[in-house]
Image (cartoon, rainbow, N blue to C red; front, side, top):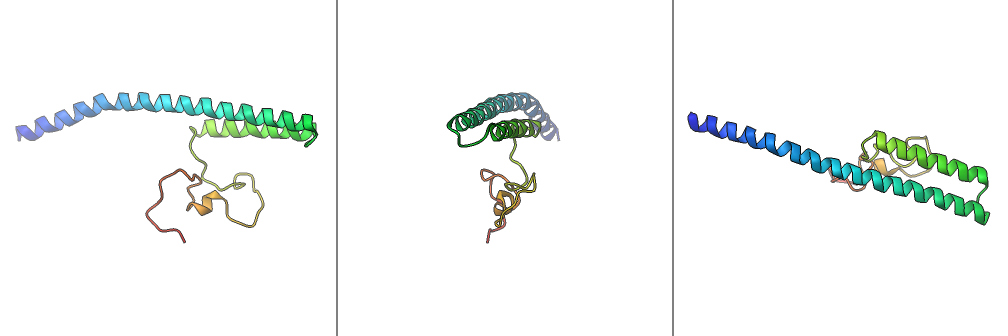
Length: 121
Protein backbone atom coordinates (compact mmCIF):
# COMPACT_ATOMS: atom_id res chain seq x y z
CA UNK A 1 0.00 0.00 0.00
CA UNK A 2 2.82 2.38 0.86
CA UNK A 3 4.46 1.66 -2.50
CA UNK A 4 1.32 2.71 -4.37
CA UNK A 5 1.01 5.86 -2.30
CA UNK A 6 4.67 6.73 -2.95
CA UNK A 7 4.22 6.05 -6.67
CA UNK A 8 1.09 8.22 -6.79
CA UNK A 9 2.80 11.11 -5.00
CA UNK A 10 5.79 10.82 -7.34
CA UNK A 11 3.54 10.99 -10.41
CA UNK A 12 1.70 14.04 -9.04
CA UNK A 13 5.00 15.78 -8.21
CA UNK A 14 6.36 15.12 -11.71
CA UNK A 15 3.16 16.41 -13.27
CA UNK A 16 3.33 19.62 -11.24
CA UNK A 17 6.92 20.17 -12.35
CA UNK A 18 6.24 19.35 -16.02
CA UNK A 19 3.12 21.49 -16.55
CA UNK A 20 4.81 24.91 -16.20
CA UNK A 21 7.55 23.82 -18.59
CA UNK A 22 5.00 22.70 -21.19
CA UNK A 23 3.00 25.91 -20.76
CA UNK A 24 6.11 28.04 -21.24
CA UNK A 25 6.94 26.23 -24.48
CA UNK A 26 3.38 26.79 -25.70
CA UNK A 27 3.65 30.51 -24.91
CA UNK A 28 6.76 30.85 -27.08
CA UNK A 29 5.06 29.00 -29.93
CA UNK A 30 2.00 31.30 -29.68
CA UNK A 31 4.31 34.33 -29.75
CA UNK A 32 6.01 32.95 -32.85
CA UNK A 33 2.64 32.34 -34.54
CA UNK A 34 1.54 35.87 -33.69
CA UNK A 35 4.71 37.27 -35.25
CA UNK A 36 4.28 35.17 -38.41
CA UNK A 37 0.61 36.14 -38.84
CA UNK A 38 1.59 39.78 -38.32
CA UNK A 39 4.21 39.45 -41.09
CA UNK A 40 1.63 37.78 -43.34
CA UNK A 41 -0.82 40.64 -42.80
CA UNK A 42 1.88 43.20 -43.57
CA UNK A 43 2.80 41.40 -46.80
CA UNK A 44 -0.86 41.21 -47.88
CA UNK A 45 -1.13 44.97 -47.40
CA UNK A 46 2.07 45.58 -49.38
CA UNK A 47 0.75 43.41 -52.22
CA UNK A 48 -2.46 45.44 -52.26
CA UNK A 49 -0.46 48.70 -52.44
CA UNK A 50 1.64 47.42 -55.36
CA UNK A 51 -1.44 46.22 -57.23
CA UNK A 52 -3.04 49.65 -56.79
CA UNK A 53 0.14 51.32 -58.11
CA UNK A 54 0.14 48.97 -61.13
CA UNK A 55 -3.49 49.80 -61.84
CA UNK A 56 -4.69 46.19 -61.42
CA UNK A 57 -7.17 47.22 -58.73
CA UNK A 58 -8.77 50.47 -57.64
CA UNK A 59 -7.69 52.30 -54.48
CA UNK A 60 -11.03 51.36 -52.93
CA UNK A 61 -10.37 47.68 -53.63
CA UNK A 62 -6.91 48.04 -52.14
CA UNK A 63 -8.38 49.55 -48.99
CA UNK A 64 -10.93 46.74 -48.77
CA UNK A 65 -8.18 44.12 -49.12
CA UNK A 66 -6.16 45.76 -46.35
CA UNK A 67 -9.20 45.99 -44.06
CA UNK A 68 -9.99 42.31 -44.70
CA UNK A 69 -6.37 41.37 -43.88
CA UNK A 70 -6.68 43.21 -40.56
CA UNK A 71 -10.04 41.54 -39.84
CA UNK A 72 -8.53 38.12 -40.53
CA UNK A 73 -5.52 38.81 -38.30
CA UNK A 74 -7.75 39.96 -35.45
CA UNK A 75 -10.04 36.94 -35.84
CA UNK A 76 -7.14 34.49 -35.82
CA UNK A 77 -5.60 36.25 -32.80
CA UNK A 78 -8.91 36.10 -30.88
CA UNK A 79 -9.02 32.34 -31.57
CA UNK A 80 -5.47 31.68 -30.29
CA UNK A 81 -4.07 31.19 -33.80
CA UNK A 82 -5.95 27.93 -34.32
CA UNK A 83 -7.41 26.80 -37.60
CA UNK A 84 -10.97 27.90 -38.32
CA UNK A 85 -13.83 25.44 -38.15
CA UNK A 86 -15.37 26.48 -41.45
CA UNK A 87 -14.37 26.03 -45.05
CA UNK A 88 -13.19 28.85 -47.26
CA UNK A 89 -15.94 31.43 -47.42
CA UNK A 90 -17.87 29.67 -44.67
CA UNK A 91 -17.38 32.53 -42.25
CA UNK A 92 -18.71 35.14 -44.62
CA UNK A 93 -21.17 33.16 -46.71
CA UNK A 94 -18.88 32.83 -49.72
CA UNK A 95 -20.25 31.39 -52.93
CA UNK A 96 -18.96 28.49 -54.92
CA UNK A 97 -19.85 25.04 -56.15
CA UNK A 98 -17.46 22.87 -54.18
CA UNK A 99 -17.14 22.37 -50.47
CA UNK A 100 -14.80 24.56 -48.45
CA UNK A 101 -11.82 23.18 -46.59
CA UNK A 102 -14.06 22.38 -43.63
CA UNK A 103 -16.07 19.90 -45.68
CA UNK A 104 -13.07 18.45 -47.49
CA UNK A 105 -11.24 17.80 -44.26
CA UNK A 106 -14.27 16.46 -42.38
CA UNK A 107 -15.18 19.75 -40.76
CA UNK A 108 -11.72 20.32 -39.33
CA UNK A 109 -11.13 23.44 -41.43
CA UNK A 110 -7.38 22.95 -41.18
CA UNK A 111 -5.42 20.84 -43.66
CA UNK A 112 -2.61 20.48 -41.12
CA UNK A 113 -4.74 18.95 -38.39
CA UNK A 114 -4.33 15.24 -37.76
CA UNK A 115 -6.80 13.13 -39.72
CA UNK A 116 -9.78 11.74 -37.90
CA UNK A 117 -10.30 8.00 -37.51
CA UNK A 118 -13.00 7.77 -40.17
CA UNK A 119 -12.05 7.42 -43.82
CA UNK A 120 -12.65 10.11 -46.39
CA UNK A 121 -14.67 9.32 -49.47
